[in-house]
Image (cartoon, rainbow, N blue to C red; front, side, top):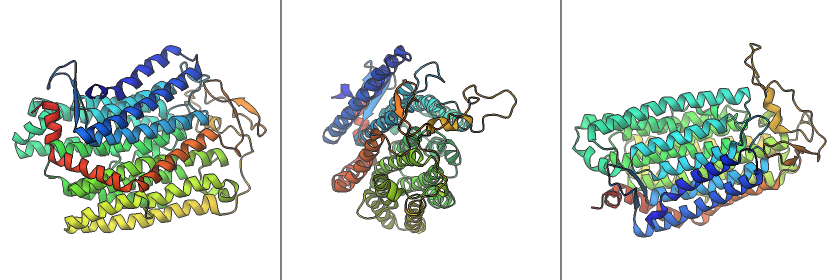
Length: 549
């Protein structure tokens, strides 16, 4: 069983090399390979989760080099759970992107880049979840960064290049801090293996341990978009294509939360910086949701809601108890699925109406009732309406806060309840503007190819730095139902904004169904996260699996 641990990382990388060898040829073959590989990664993730839950953590030393030499990969309950949820989400988003027809553009790039970049992103996420040492944790983040920049700037529009530049600058700065932190840890402890560090860091002076903890937490706070280091997110994500925005917002920020969970429990037990985490959670909860209230663009609104709800997860980590960590894990699983589904719905709304600006949309409850249902269910779930999974996660966190008692805990409990109410107001605002009110008259002509319309947005300042693709004129709207070529693969799609592609609908519905399944499976899910929290706090199962003690 241990031999299966590296496969969630290796399979996407092998598929990437195979797809790059195709160039722009065999577009259908690339799609089939990507879907099959991600389905295999999902099956492997479920297998590893079941094995880790029944047998304990699974560790493998690549090349049979024992720590501190070589590469160590570890699958325990936490990493197995994160792998399973992330694999399901990335598979659904890939299927959605195929239906949207925005996977690649061979008229703008010399290679078919979407599928290879997406697979590298999946491999990077898997590498982070399975990494048994800080160096490979760093490598996983860098794989994600490289793939993320390609995906964010897909299409080469000026707005996407600016947003991608912002994202890359922030990510590179955090990567430099991360690299520095790894060097400091190695200088202080003589190893970067997580299991060995769990033993050796306890022997260091308190001041050194606190410095190392604060440095690593700074990196992961940036990656998770925790206030006050979250200002980059609302400007980076909304300009990307809907599938890219969905997987970034739903999944990538939770990679940072996972690292906070791992580091705070395994390397720095005792929760010395718990009060700082609680303060960051409080600020994220309130400032994020108040920022969402002020937005009228659906993607930016959801980006601010994302920042706010990261605060719930940091709340659980700051509490640091078994109940707090378990509640944080439940909320991570819930939020990955629900937030991704909502961003996919935003892409469907943009496809249907030509905009995500809420003041220019309306009437969708009558014109597209299925789309309305796909929004309403995850929106209510995000707001924490009982008995949905959002309510289950928040209830676990509130119980942990009440059990902790103290001024910070009671303040966070009150802020969490208030944030939930304001989130409900924000979702009701979206429902009223986009779905409930009368449809406005000024809608784009039916048949407009929405993927091409942003090619001239802010295309330059007349100084000769305009992207060649951006200089092209806007395509004229085609009659509804007419087929045109709008993808890198050369596949023809119907350019009507009235009938949404069934693949996009079904992929979104699958995620919504998965989020509702968490409610039905609420007891097994909370039991699993409780066992995982106990394993994290005990630490010895992880250490023994890696070091063989």
